[in-house]
Length: 137
Image (cartoon, rainbow, N blue to C red; front, side):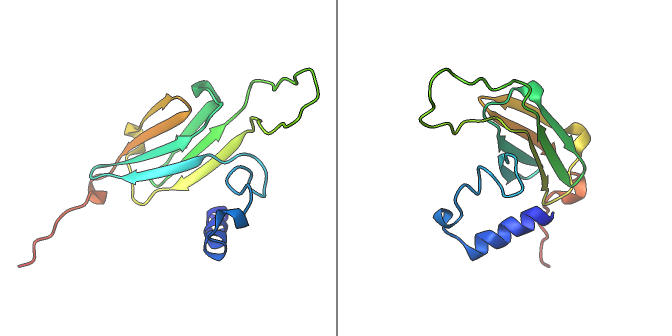
């Protein structure tokens, strides 16, 4: 989508992370954005997302044959501690992230697990998307 294209453009223009302070933690349009890995295996795609501080009941996953959307809603209220804060960087913010997949998947057979702040979604590829070796005659 448009935001992913803009992030890729910024990455090409400014390849050094120090030139884009807090880019991963707080995108310019507001809200948090989970970091995502997509692994292409022979018969499935694996989508992993880092969502620390959220419980599995606070995360919603929706999918289509070519995209996955992750939505997190922070239901707990952050508490202010007594005393003067020297530094206050931790916060829980709602997030919404859609990632487009490199091939079509059977999202009706998707399986999701959640452990230690890591969400893992396994999506079986549809038959035509599986890699096949073609023998040259």
